[in-house]
Image 1: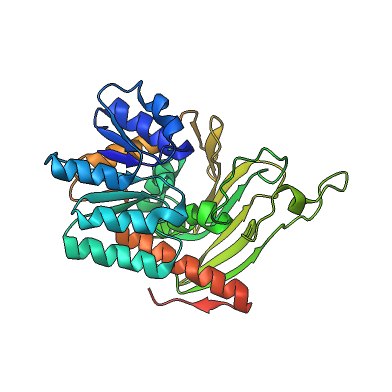
Image 2 (image 1 turned 120 degrees about the horizontal axis):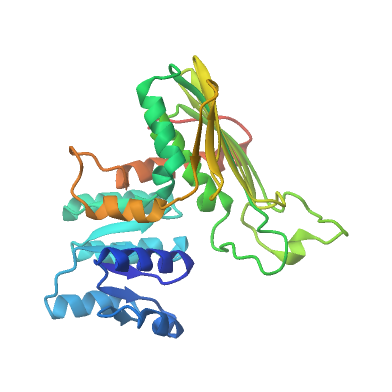
Length: 331
């Protein structure tokens, strides 16, 4: 396996793949990162994905799968080059920033008869895994409503580590959109959304957020997904001033509340049961699922077509916000 992109998320993936014994090559345009890779014995380093592909093709080396962990705005061109070589592909979310590009990636993978999967690792969070088990068991009846809150303080302070090429919808809201589809097991029929930029314009002391993080990308999103007699509400913000991740699930005969920030992740049920999850290995578990044979024909990792559906919903999110109306979906 090869990893394209050795930034913050890329390095996490590289570490996991090395521990799993399947990492063969890494490429990143920043040659200053090469020394970080040298500690992994037997792992080759390239300064571009084209050099990587050319070398493996010229020397007839087997390359089963490539992982793209570069900025989202670069995913499409890299993905097309890799798919041309008929190599299976895992792309960190999202597949692409443009719906047309996302659809093209899926079409290209089908033409080349290769698999595309996408990095929605929240499916592997132990609290989500437990919640999914409860949903499927019908312990509390039918799942009726979901509520997600994912806030951070990434606008507070000039040393923010948040990404700059996309806004909060593509960065974080997509995780909860995917989780809503995963937990409900059906597709929504409409989207209502509002997105804003520099949601809180001032900080204590009168400091302007726009002076800290000048950006035309949205930093706050409120999203409602309407299903048949069910709904999911998603709140995502970089301007909340605090970091929190919460989930609420309302069933026909009970409810579950949860907090998903490690090491204090837990689920509290309406029957007074409580489940604690001090350890979260979601990314490593996702990669294990990716490289393992499907269990009973099922892969938990997000397949390309599911990721494309997330892309279609995101497209509707922006249209709904722009046109200030609920937007119907035909998925």
